[in-house]
Image (cartoon, rainbow, N blue to C red; front, side, top):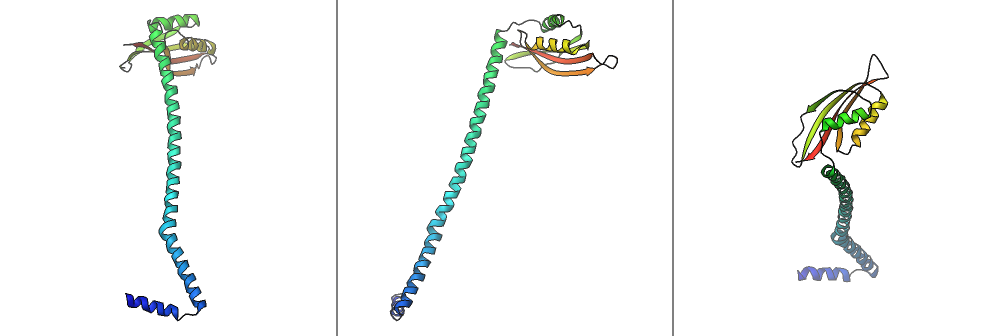
Length: 182
């Protein structure tokens, strides 16, 4: 090894000052390229990956904040509904619907109980209501009365058809649910 080093010194000593300067410049440039390849480039790559991870984490954080706001809003609505169920009068849904129909000047064609899902906290009572030959104003008045009744009533499905014999009258079928604490 020392012999190789001695030969390199002799080689450099025999070069002219201009050649030594050129050789030093090439060696310096080669050193800078090696330094760039070994240190700078990996650091820049890590910085880019870190920036992408930070951007992804910020997007995740924004999504979590949005989901939290949605959760709080839904939870607030649920609390309001639960309070309305707990404080509202618990009466017979058939009686309530019949009373609201009389207020809207509607004759109910039929009311049939429907099977409801079993809940753990609340008992749901479902009724299918059929109205025949009602005007749009009567239907709207009746549905608005159901939605604003003191007892918590919820319209689950609604089907409206015009009558073939009298196009200004409607046949309406809908399902109403009421909830009571178990």
